[in-house]
Image 1 (cartoon, protein in one colour):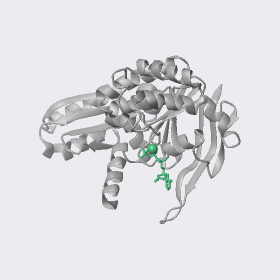
Image 2 (tube, rainbow, N blue to C red; image 1 turned 135 degrees about the vertical axis):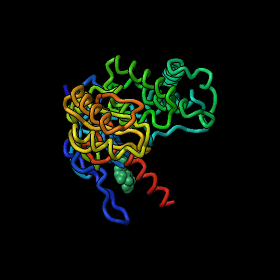
Image 3 (tube, helix red, strand yellow; image 1 turned 120 degrees about the horizontal axis):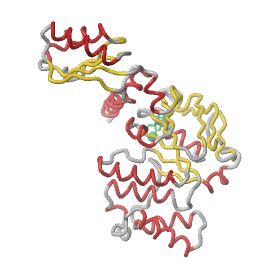
Image 4 (cartoon, rainbow, N blue to C red; image 1 turned 120 degrees about the vertical axis):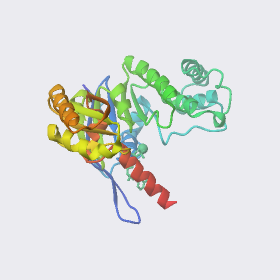
Length: 330
Ligand SMILES: Nc1ncnc2c1ncn2[C@@H]1O[C@H](COP(=O)(O)OP(=O)(O)OP(=O)(O)O)[C@@H](O)[C@H]1O
Ligand SMILES: [Mg+2]
């Protein structure tokens, strides 16, 4: 059964330099009890989708239904059954962790006693016991994310929206949060999460929608997306970066399309259909050309490769470009 369904969503913002199409005809459907990841770079429209589905903004065009309830005509009923946390989420910096959760409970019209009990349960569950009585302004990034996520769970929502739940966290805190999220979805909660991390989508989601420019540009399981770009990739690490040009010619000879040279020119890779065979030929030709290697092998494509194939740029390149633009604007 489909529990989240969006059709033809458009959202246009006016700006000084003309209209911005944050969403440009986006379709989405999420089966009940599954995890869907919206994967896309900065500015792809991820937060805008979440805001529409959680009734914070109205789309310029299109429809959205959450658990059978129309988001546009009945936003209050939608809000009663969803939990959301993300880039726009408000925690009161001066209140303690406990008080923030208690306040969320009161906003959801839980009685005073129930709100306090629920706040305490979440503080325990999220291992914030020690921090629970301190004002949020002294929290670390990881603690903040946990209190934010806890806030989304106060009413035991049937559907949960998480906007970039682990952005900016160190690897250890990210793993801890992934585990918390996994436990939640094991309990049957439907989750729509957004992320810029290919690895996060791969790890948490049943199904991934890649979005770019306010549209879904590809959709499927992580394996399906990887399959779209062929079986294997042959990768070689060079002893001498001056030989990157020669090596990439040889790899391209046995691969599909152009070979990719890393930015430090120390490794070269190419997509291939028959991995083992291509690797043999590549090694033979490199040996004959006298190109020295530190390492050579094959690997399965990553979601980064998928993104590059679909959009012509890697998610990282896009992030770099965005960061450069923001730097300029300063
Ligand atoms: N209130 C607004 N006014 C004008 N433009 C907006 C507004 N909100 C979003 N946009 C623009 O809409 C586009 C999509 O923004 P959105 O925040 O949905 O992207 P995102 O995928 O969440 O990006 P990020 O990964 O940086 O959070 C961007 O170009 C953004 O600048
Ligand atoms: Mg965003």
